[in-house]
Length: 418
Image 1 (cartoon, rainbow, N blue to C red):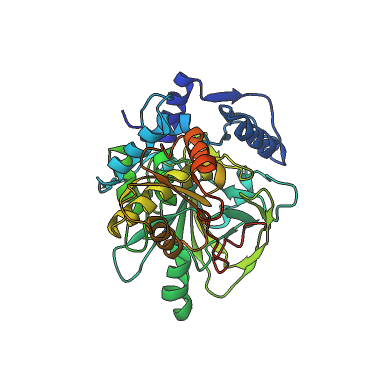
Image 2: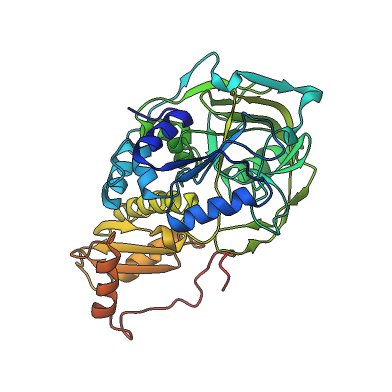
């Protein structure tokens, strides 16, 4: 059976021992973030916090919802012992069969509705995760929903959401994101606010779809349905024509302002360092809707492996494999190990011509110039998902002079410390 909401998923994790209930009071100020980070470093079960300092009982937080391959397997309805290779094959199969969403009149996310002067985002718990962060961030594992006003394209993405004031949130919807491009091209020139919704507390495969590199024109909600093997139920927002997952725990509705900028960040990100702060356009909240006793999903980025690394690994691996096949490369498989934060691609090929490695590297360089700046090309007899085999092949088959090539003009993510 698919996990069609977060609570079903937590129940499934309970059966496999992949969630731990923490009933002692924890502090939203650094303590929750520290526990989640420690859980990630130990590959421990996901912590579910039941009592948060300064907040009434009933608010809960699930940390590191998808930070291990075991939890990814449970999300797919598989045994937690399912191999990484099988998980990637399952993702590839399901992504190829998108399912359109289903519109419903109402849903659990409408159990409580707050509008107008009653809106105060600080009534809801948001962790301060890293010492030195510029904000408390309520959105670290969620979906940001926007729509192209000139077509029926709806985009789901995942960009950090910080608290600014009672009715204002910050969002990292910069120009390299789909939401940022929509904002810059369709709304800012007309000086019009862009409707936005933030859905928090989703089932994990909806979040996996939100981070998938599908590109403009591709609606992630269809692919979420394919990953879940069941349509996502959508319900209309209270204050806009956007539709949000009816089974979500918590919904923020608002408008991104075209002519205002506020500080966003710094933010403790995946390199294990703080990433600089930006001035980004805030969203003015128009409504907040949520389930009774809502569960907030929280990811705490840092040294791998955490939710973003698992998601980036599986989504990037398939995207690269698909593009290599389309360009005629005799690829067998691709693995972007989560430990490398998306910067390394291990590619298996049938070596049918002498320049196959150069061909692979040039295609990867062109498709994502800021990621996968290290590419390892393996013969087809090497299992790219098996680090033992990959490292053995590297040190025994790769000539250190002829087998290693460096491109001094290669772009690298600005987040990479070197």
